[in-house]
Image (spheres, one colour):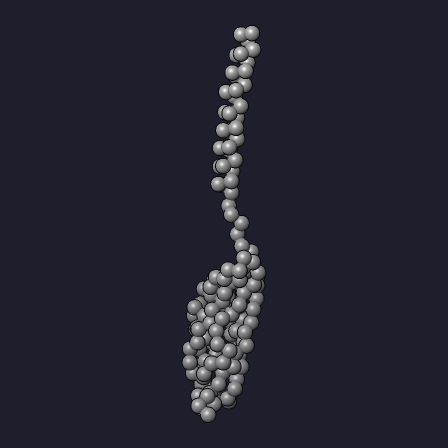
Length: 132
């Protein structure tokens, strides 16, 4: 009879100890796991569709994620303009337009970020066109 009581007491003490260890291990495993990062789904170029000649205009590249969040990533993007009427003057997305020889010229801004590409078409108008 004495051995039976000792065996019950040992099992009674051991079971809560095992549960406590399992709870601690589960807590640390959950706490140390990184939360899921949102997935990049696309990029956009934000800025005016029509700009005056001989000015500087700001364009931003925005990353769009699957959770709906958006992050401005212009400095980390490759932004280019292929045109004789304007140029990108810094990594901040500033596009400088020149004085037009002919009214109503167009240019396209291209942006790359993490293997994603986007383009935006922009019209340059002369000051005399806008004031009419």
